[in-house]
Image (tube, rainbow, N blue to C red; front, side):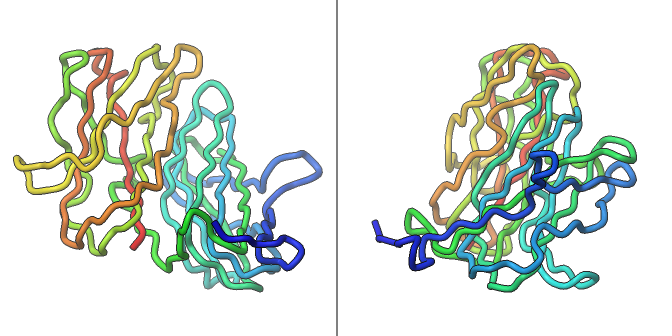
Length: 273
């Protein structure tokens, strides 16, 4: 592993979007249910050239959310990561994941979101910009989202089926990916369910035509607990793989419960070339 002395700036990590006055991240507030909020600036001007960043999201509202990160000037913000699926249950939940997307020095970084909640729903967002990548990750210029549903601030619904502890049918997440994917993330959503019992999931991600799917990754394990009321973890990855452009991606699962509403969940996939 490389040696990146912080004193030379090579290993520098800078946190943006924090609010010392209330010990939270920068708040973004939605206007209308399932519609994107205005952009909120996280950085004045970034002080480093970043190979990637950690995105941190926190909320205390019982809602599903899709979060965008962008760079640029006010009125001309370019989305670099779109529709990050984030769900908050009855207990304050946090999403924290690494996006290997490069950000040039002196950039302005922004965030916005949409929510299933009514006007005034607030989440808190911050970003840790990293001057160097890690684990051999090279920065990318694209981070592509598959399966997000802006109509309900969630993802593609997957049903494990009516028989407990038995894999259900495959559900298509995207018919054909437009890029070759070398890094894949899997996000799990709550479908805006306010109450969820204790249960568990095994989730498979597959590739291939309908009826001829092959398992790409198997038995990703999720758990919900009575009182928490949401699936954890919310994000898996990155998984290092090789998925050609034009490939169909799908998901299936088994659940320890056969209860119709509670067994359902959402999936959104994120790919980097």
